[in-house]
Image 1 (cartoon, rainbow, N blue to C red):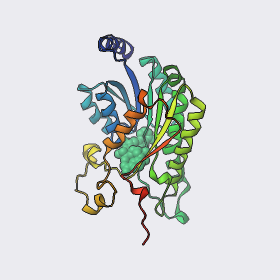
Image 2: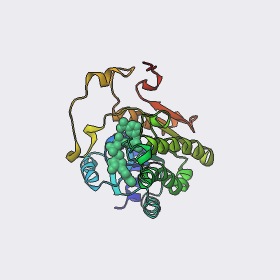
Image 3: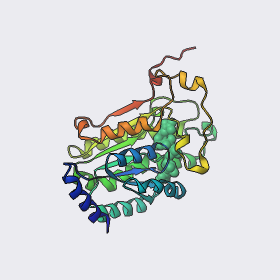
Image 4: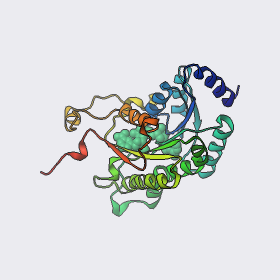
Length: 269
Ligand code: NAD
């Protein structure tokens, strides 16, 4: 049975409970924040297609697909031909797309000091973190318009503030915030587009097994946050779930900072 017939069958089942079947794509959906988003949406009865460049992590994610409706596809979001082919697959196999979560990213913020920053390292971060969301939005746009869907881009508080040697990452995420309001203008009124800027989210227990590292964090790591703790991937997944729901129908072009209050804290010494 292909995905279209599966969706039809689930739609018939869900009609009885007055719910509709919706399809979401989560990029970088096999690990970290993306994995939390994938699982959250799947528990809320979305058909989720998680794409990731890491096949090992994707294989592990499929362990959950026995419980939930999750499909994994290998994809490099910075490769235009592959992105186009992937969304052709979504159209052919699913026939609809209701939400695109642009989460895939090279998440490590540091680069070499600016004097030594290699141009190819700069390009790599921009290609994955900024061009990736643009390419996925470009090839998902028609499907999203038809279903009056929505997009959530995962930016970072580093779009708004930095530590030294963050040029490539901060610039890529600042670009994501700007891409968000540009897309909201281009794709409205059919498609809403928002961004979330996470602060420090502890993803170590959400990595593939070979990279999991569960050393406890220090007390100071938690206490410095106004809410008294470091962020969890589920903090971001909960907001994604809200933003793509009909409850958020009057919200578009915005950037939501979710950082336990860190960017509201004076740190003069
Ligand atoms: P992560 O490394 O755990 O997850 C990122 C995922 O993206 C990985 O599974 C990785 O394989 C995948 N990926 C990387 N390059 C890809 C590509 N070219 N194509 C497809 N998939 C690719 O990182 P995370 O901490 O979960 O970060 C998720 C997003 O949240 C990133 O965009 C990151 O910049 C952002 N973010 C994270 C934090 C944090 O503290 N964890 C804070 C702010 C923003």
